[in-house]
Image 1 (cartoon, rainbow, N blue to C red):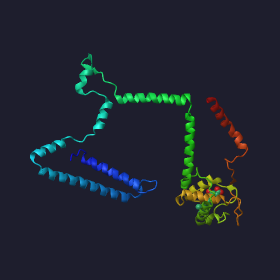
Image 2: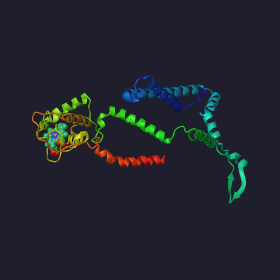
Image 3: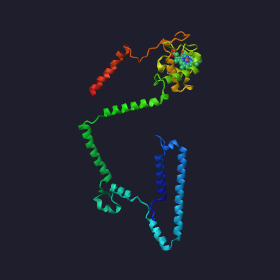
Length: 318
Ligand code: HEC
């Protein structure tokens, strides 16, 4: 039998075939099977690889034994067939065709007759791969011109808007699964009963000693009134819980002990105290907090001016 493929190539191809087959047949959900069953997969692959190498060795050995049983004439013939080494003929032909270069022997045909201090020029053809790319770019340009400049298919602005909208949706999706990724800038008030209950548990374990179970206050300030020493609203409250109060007042930074999600939950629970009447309310401390982002009639009128300028600029540009 004439065997033209190199043994290492056979092993590699067989090995990857097995890998692909395993990926296809092992049910591992969205993730590649390698990540789901790493030890199993690597163990199995190692075994397969060993087997393949062993088979290659056995074939080699059999070949040797058979070779030694041949008479001299047959040995010569056998070696002759071994000579034509494995080559990817089609690929090689294609590659040479695409380069379109002449071999050294043929260069006489294309040498130009001028001669500058011994430097001479070959009149090579443009390499076909380059020429085809050039034609392709012409076709592309025509299609592009007709599609976007004559029929105005869609503009870059629209494309941008679409991508941003899609990304926004993805962010929303992601946030739903990654509640723990909040910080003081991104935290939002949690309203799900499960979050509020989790916040209640955290509050009862860590906070009641100073703030009382009903938020009325003790060592710590009253959390039920609209007055805040360090600022109200979910972002400030989250920040206070995370970073702690003023030095020496007794409110520590809880970020060492609580995860971001837990701080968001307990902050939301703290805000649910607003407007309730505790048994022993501590006198109000700090200022009444007004949300700067709330739509009050005074502020939008002032903020509206710069926005309108931007709008009119955008209109003139379009
Ligand atoms: C050792 C007592 C103590 C414990 C425990 C404690 N706090 Fe405090 N807390 C305080 C004190 C004191 C302040 C006032 C800090 C200041 O004035 O800077 C405060 C302030 C606050 C504030 C800001 C109130 C405002 O008016 O701005 C919030 C919100 C708060 N605590 C929530 C919590 C939460 C949630 C926990 C539990 C995770 C907790 N605290 C645990 C003592 C405590």
